[in-house]
Image (cartoon, rainbow, N blue to C red; front, side, top):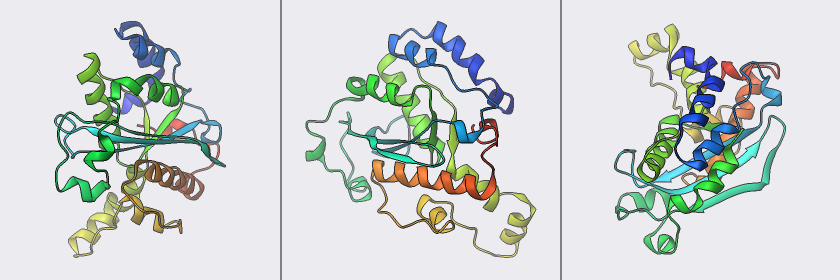
Length: 235
């Protein structure tokens, strides 16, 4: 996303609400997006995580979705959602041990198109939070485009990007790399350890969504204030 786009999400949504051909997408964009100067303490967040058949959004598919609503003070586990989805292609032998989802679990699972209304309803009007936006945003866009003939876009707060700004960029990080220091891991579990957050099992979409929500709460408490505008975090 270009830097100037960060301040133009509302305008972009208005155009998409008019131009989208699918009723579900039009309704999603009609919900709008919060103002760029909204303080993070007033932002309704929803953490989103996917498990997929691989890492290429053009050929791989989403097989599970987990999401949880939260704000800076509370994570609403009672309102969390979790879906298994049936992919068009077979799971690979290498992916099954990674996410723990088996063929038999997906035999009766729906296609994304059957639950798309529900997913869109959960994230409409919220700010989506992910750990590594190139999975959730790109896979969702590709999956929707495959089914509807048009994609989807929305602002996100990327907790991995927040860690990268501290540990992968800047003069100090470059000096460390040049002098042979191993870079800090910015994976979800390792990032949580820096904030003394508990260890959770990884690669379950709902557990990872909760872990991402907790991580953002900690990042904001450590680096920002409750009055920080959301435009400083979203992408």
